[in-house]
Length: 253
Length: 261
Picture 1: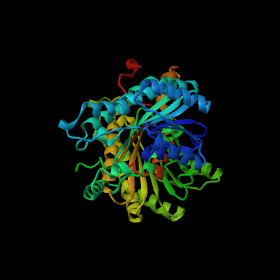
Picture 2: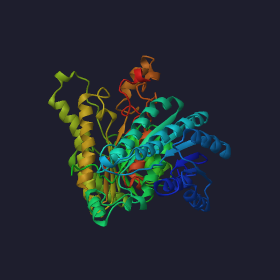
Picture 3: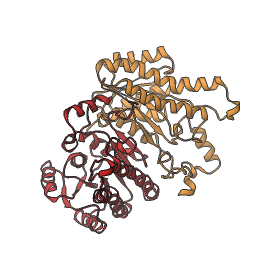
Picture 4: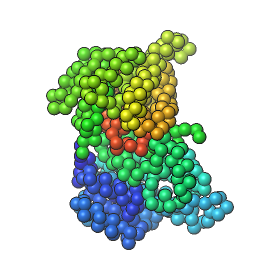
């Protein structure tokens, strides 16, 4: 029960910090072999060194998932270096800006969708044949409560994260025949340094008061959910969206 | 990493199917389990758990009756030393009587057993858990709560009410440390669905069971149990008021699956 991902090659994108790093760490503790991907090789290297120092097998890949050719080359390299096909893929990488409608620029939207939607299509496209060769696999995509319950200044972000849900469920239909499961995590407010930095103290206190849990989530709590969905414990869960928001989106007010 | 080490868990409907599989899984994750059911197979589940060297007691009682649910909570605390997890898992299917012929008596009975039993679990386990500031309550709902033609009409409506109860109770327990979630199984062979499976076998179309799901197969009780174990454990510590579908994708994809696939 303690090594649900034993010997499985697990690709985690956006793995240099925050939720992605917590997922890599949890997968390592569950026996996974870690292929850590991030657009910033500079940030990724020390993170992967940290994972190795915990005794995990981990490799760093500085790749922009928004580029199709790069992603296909990345997955070929991962299979070659681990000498095994990819079993688990976590699409966590994201680049986002939160702005009112009038301020949204072409470059912002293009970059957001290149990383957060196109990137998922490319990684899924590259991973699926490897998973099929090993007899199946599990893909976990990070959406957000913003997909269904947007907050202020999140027009592009909500579209992006709703896009993740649609592409995941549609992928689930096509990939079921290859014994690949595709599921979605919709986190609420997670207390990563990047998310906390967006708000002043009063806003943080007000948001926490709205949540039945009364607090922001920890990256490790999303990682625990990702490990469940990635593992065979979720073997009959397909196309599901699992929200982890401390009950934030349950009440009307 | 046994994820329910030191926890005390009640599983109702524990004599067979999803309840039995969950009681066994919870125990393998380290929980002491009070297996609750109406029939003698309740004791068999507890005995199976003890034969693996884990801890379990059996209580033969109807978990749809108010004073009995109070007694279940008392017995778990007195026999196992506490209560951190309550899996409210009893249910009946209702009948496929044509809608226009259905009776208030049938609806009342289906609601009493499927929905009010969940309210009672929340009420009595909730009193104990909110007082101690910690707990996880899991309700068995169904894919039929989200989709038509996946069960009897009274059953489907009663399970939709269970979904709402998971959400409203989670909100009512805000700030208490007690979480409430529902697990929504698709088609699984249990005592409730045995007739569906037996009829399909008799007609030689067993392979078609579950064919409307993207995964093209029914689920197994153990797969629902693994999801229940996740919701019971601290691995789901930020998951609250949620409806976890474990249905092979039937509720998340195009309803005309046979055409779309």
